[in-house]
Amino acid sequence: MRTYKLVLGLMIAVLWPTWATAQTTSFSSPREALRQGVSAYQGGYYEIAMPALAFASSGGEFMANYYLAKIYQDSTGAYTNHAKAYALFEKIADDHLDVDPDDPRARYVGKALTALAGYLLRGLPEIGLQPDPERAVFYLKNASSTFNDEDAQFELAKLQLKGEGVETNVALGRHWLSVLSRNGHAGAQAFFADLLWRGKHVEADPARALALIAVAVDNASPQDSMWIEEIYQNIFCGSADGTRKQATGIVAQWGNRYGRPPPSDQRDRSGLSQLASGPVRTCKNGELVNTIGPRSESIVTAPATARLPAAEQHPFSYGSATGAPTLRDVNVPGAAAPRTP
Image (cartoon, rainbow, N blue to C red; front, side, top):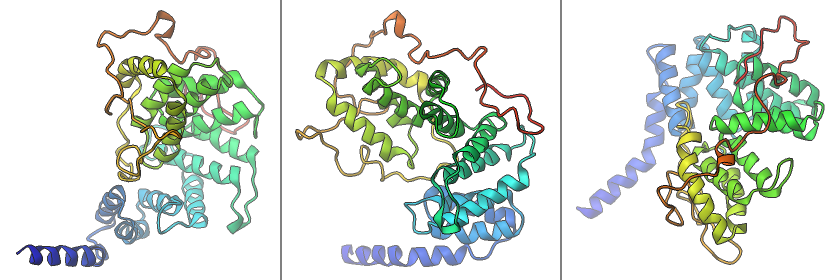
């Protein structure tokens, strides 16, 4: 019986991809194909998602092109094709740039602009696209202001700190990192934590850096978990025991205030997270890298009554949102009033 079950399990494992793909090659409607394609994408089954999304795209379903672009954009997948991703993101932006910001599609138009900006910052040799930071900033400003895209705001903040494609403005870049960190943006939290750890653009604060990167690890999407966990490892391994204990007390409060659930359209890449279920991370001295995030096992027991000093009650207060310069490019024709996140 055990042998039979083992053989049956192996047969299902081998035949499942072929059977599942065959089941998704015929659809009752483009909308049904989109539903199946998005479901497969969220589960990480790109081979099943692609034919469904292609069918939905041919039927005029807006979201199908977006998810196809995301599959082609994923450098860790088997279907990476950045030229196709760029073309699809560009089509989304060109066809819907004037969409009303309250339209459900607006969010994805903003994300398409942000993706295009990423390609413009790096360049795309496959299609002869040279790096163009100024144009990238133009896209990011529109995605940030018109469509309120947090990833665009994050990328702009980093560029403002470096003065790449835009005039250097450390105060404004730091302000937006603060806003995004308070809103639970994992990338901004991790980037800000690294600045706090190194004392760059802000006063060094090891305990707060470790606490913030611990929250970022819990907030991180599967696509971002690798680089965020690398920052966590660096800060954790460089922290003394006293700093870790202090950070654990801070995390006890920050986890609920600055955490956020993963987005509903996030691809399930659980298993890639090294801290959660992959290869064990260790420090150079062989010490195990433990997590101290709110949804992780703490490395020490923090008192339930741990309180932050009064000065730490608003941990990311760098710049005021009131009267702060906006990220809107005022030269954009027909620019609407900017939205302050």
